[in-house]
Amino acid sequence: MSRIPAAEAAHRLARHDFVRGVVVLSTCNRFEAYLDLDDPLAAPDAVAAEAVAAAIASDSPDDAQQLRAVAATHLGVSAVRHLFAVTAGLESMVVGEEEIAGQVQRAAREARAAGTMTGALDRLFQQAARTSRVVRGVADQSRVDRGVARLALDLASSRVPDWAQVRVLLVGTGRYAATTIASLRSRGAEHVSVFSATGRAEMFAAKYGVRAEGELREALTGADVVVTCTARYTISPEHVTAGHPLLVIDLGLPRNVDPAVGAVPGVELIDLELLALHAPLPELAGPAHAVVGDAAAGFAADAAAAPAIVALRRHVDAMLEAEVARARARGDDGSVESALRHFAGVLMHGPSERARELAAEGRLSDFVAGLAAVYGVEPEPRSAAADEASTA
Image 1: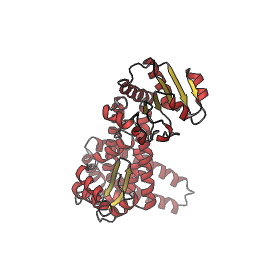
Image 2: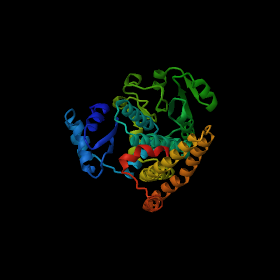
Image 3: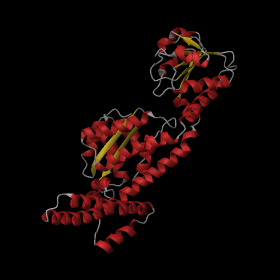
Image 4: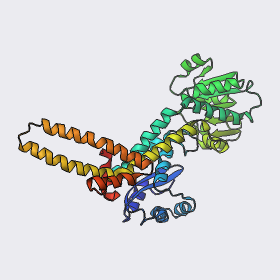
C-alpha cells in the first residue's frame, strides 16, 4: 500500500491535461489508478503509467520505484475486464474474496466526493459493482467455503498425525463454521469445541454436537488446533501461551488472527495468504471469469456505440421538439405531446440495441454508415457523446 493518501494521489493525477478523471484504489496489497484520458492516443500506456508513479514519487520514492518495476497497464476493454475481475474477487489472494468489492466502491465514492470522477468512470464502477453481484449469484458460495476449509485442513494434515487424537477449537459460528466441522469430521476429528464472542456457542454446539467454550484464553490453552472463521474477534499474542504447541488456521476475511501470533514460540499460523500460495481455489473461477468477460465485452460495446446512439437520439429529438411545438401551437392539451414523446422513446430503443449488438460483433461501422446514408447524421467524438449515452 502506498504511504501517500489515495485522495492526494488522485488530485495529483487529475492535474494532468490529458486526464479527465481518476479513481485510485489503494488497499493493503493493491495500488491501482483508473484514468479517464482525454485522448488515449496522446497519452499512451507508458505515459499514463509514469504519471501514476510520479504522483507518489515526491512523498514515497521507494513506493514509486517499486511501482515502476512491477506495474501492469491495461487499456480499453482490458482495463474494464481487470476492474470487473478485481471487484468480483477474482484477482485476490483467495479467489472469491468479497471484501474487495466494498473497497472498490469506497474508492469510487471518494472520487465522487473529491470531484475526480467523470461520467464514464462512474458508469464503469457502477457496472463493476453490478457484475460482482452477478458473480456472487452465479457462484455456489458453499462450494467455495468447502474448498477453503478443505484446502486449509489438507495443508494442516501434514502437521497433524492423527485428527482423532487432537483437540480442535473452532472460533466463530458463521459461514465457514459448519463446513469446517464437516471437513474435520471427514478426517476423523472427535474432540471439537466452539467459542463465539457473540454468545452463539451454546446454540451452535447443540446443533452440531460439539462442546461450547465460554472463555477464549482458557479454550486456547486446552486446544491443539484452532480454526478461526469469524468477522468479530481477533486473536492476539496475548491470548496464546508461549511454548504450548498450537496450530492456528485463520480462515477469516479480514484476518481473525494477528500475524504476530505466528511468532509466538510453539505456535504455527496458517492463513489465507499462505493458502493462496499453495493452491488457488478453482470452484469460483470458471463461471465467474465467463461472467466478467461477458460483462466487460458488453460494457465496451456500449461505450463504442455511444456516439452513434447519441447522434441518432439528437436527430430524433430535434424532429420531436418540432412536432411538439406545432402541437402546442394548435392548442394541444398535452395528450399529443405525451404520445409523441412515448413514440420517440420506443423508436429509439430498437436502433440503440442494434447499435450495441453490432458494436459487440465488431460491425459498428455498418450502423454508422447507415446513419449517414439514411439520415445524414455523423457521430461526434467520444468526449462529446460519452456522458449522454447512459440514458439512450
